[in-house]
Image 1 (spheres, rainbow, N blue to C red):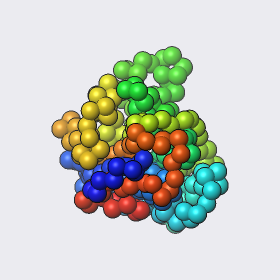
Image 2 (image 1 turned 90 degrees about the vertical axis):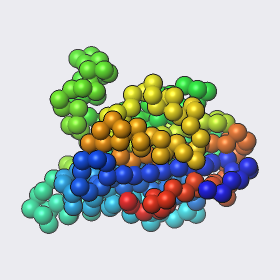
Image 3 (image 1 turned 90 degrees about the horizontal axis):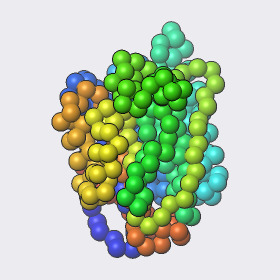
Length: 268
């Protein structure tokens, strides 16, 4: 990593197969020139899951960095919808096999952020030392929690906690949810697949995001999941806003924190 005191945004990312799976169906992408980051968690078996998650990050990677912020957000959503159609076509070529992936995406521009997502990969925001879950899982247990039938703690240990209700490439029509908010100095964002959140509750995530340096934070979060059992693929991206000029971010001011084995701009 190259230090740059005047860089408002830095980030760190990792993806790992875990301790049990034989292949990594997750994919991550960091596009500092777009101020866009995304995590995708594939489903449908080794080959199919990897196909789906990589279709999403490849569609995002093809976006033009010269787009204005508002157009970029719409184009990012359109890229996910394009990936949806690509995955559906692949499923048809495979006799209707289940092929799909979650996606969670963060975009930052001019003192604001946008979160786009489908599925149960998550975006968290740490601001003033407090952790907020920005996205809401599209899952069976999340629906039960919202209806008052389960507590958050019961949902984490529910036998159907891995059943998602929305995914890219599944169903004829895909709805991509969106949430927008403001950013401030020192804010941090965590994008992750459920390979992390199976082993780290909100209190632990808040502690790590408050204390761990950006240079080592993705490795620290990865190790928490591996130490917990690593039964699933694990993907983590942490994006950090610097202490200066958080309200006037520009694409030229973005710095990448490089993690060996996790290159920016492609699926892993």
